[in-house]
Length: 52
Image 1 (cartoon, rainbow, N blue to C red):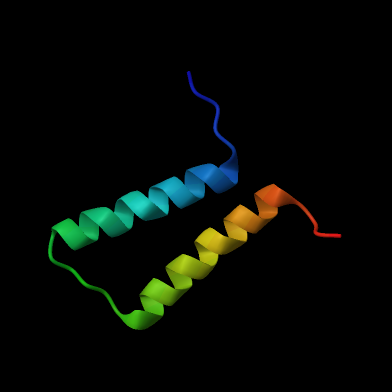
Image 2 (cartoon, rainbow, N blue to C red; image 1 turned 30 degrees about the vertical axis):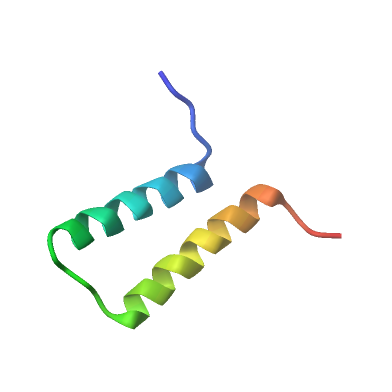
């Protein structure tokens, strides 16, 4: 069993979904890409905690 923080899991799943879509030839829209990047950044920021 592997325990993984929610933010890491979310980012990993998003990366895998993007890679699978790209491998299938789906390019998606710029808006979709921006939303995905922002979600990954938000997940990363939540793991770092509040900044001083």
